[in-house]
Image (tube, rainbow, N blue to C red; front, side, top):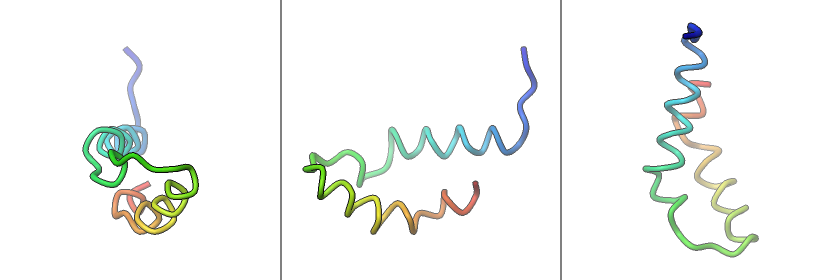
Length: 51
């Protein structure tokens, strides 16, 4: 088993939360709307500040 760095663990946890628990990522959006959601919400997400 390969040891992971703290940065890798935080990145995995942030990705897991974003993929499975984020309320903004579970909506059905058109491609243009998804870009807007990513710009508006994901860019301000506190999880991105950890990475």
